[in-house]
Image 1 (tube, rainbow, N blue to C red):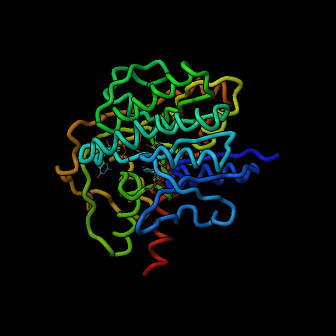
Image 2: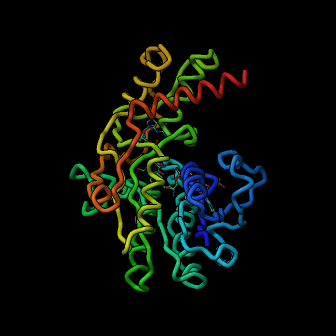
Length: 322
Ligand code: NAP
Ligand code: GDD
């Protein structure tokens, strides 16, 4: 009999890649989607015939219980969150409701309906925040620097706590930044690749950015969802850092993206102080040795290829619209 999986956040970047992966492995996949006046399911439109969509919201415990009852899952992946760091200063309480308490509500629904299901929590390298040691691994101390990071740290610890309190098979993947042509346009890589393509096509003249010196460990989302799945196939539940081990600056993303289009980024990028965050995470770089050893996981797509692929995808998409 085929395995059954429930994915929250299925309409997001990672949800769409994970749904593709699980379907390709013969899973029956249920995706939780919340009601919106203007439904945006374009990332999973190509999966419409094979995915079962279940209505529900991380704010609404009853809807999560119903989703569990309908899906009867062997595996649950909690990818839903308010995931954009700047919004977490504008909406700190809502961010905590979705990103922190939402995980508790889902774990409670799981305990109630499907206590033997395996659970994946989307933890984030943002919980390392103001780092004192590099690279960061599973033993690095946490110091989140945004309401988002604080909410993710709560969700991380509640998952660990439910594993220890109730013996759930619950794992946290501490994922470093991962991108793709399906990345939300507000995140810095996609903002750069999309705006660079618009400039190339004469649709825009400049690109306004905040801190160009921030450094991140950027990987490809398709590689990272494979790690999520691998964590739930292990003999015992553990937490893992998932990262490439390479760090690059926002400035380097600009260099590569504009270069792919034959442009000089310095002629188009404008610093905008309004885009600088109240508290910044200056750098993140992960050590995924544990995942490499236990899961046999390693990234397939490198930084240059990732950014160049994103630029080409944006150029294709925008060219098709004009
Ligand atoms: P994303 O594209 O922003 O997707 C977030 C998803 O959460 C969307 O499907 C969204 O649904 C859903 N959602 C938000 N609030 C909800 C609620 N109250 N109830 C139900 N669904 C809700 O994020 P992503 O990049 O795929 O990331 C997936 C997860 O990994 C997130 O938890 C994120 O914080 C975490 N993470 C991401 C990265 C990264 O670099 N991408 C790194 C570490 C951790 P709508 O479509 O309705 O808005
Ligand atoms: N978004 C954005 N827009 N970021 C900018 C800009 C800009 O105009 N200019 C500079 N940056 C810098 C930010 O200050 C930050 O240091 C860096 O670019 C990356 O920003 P984002 O792409 O927004 O990602 P993030 O690192 O804050 O958060 C992402 O990664 C986390 C994992 O570490 C999100 O996907 C989170 O959900 C995820 O947990």
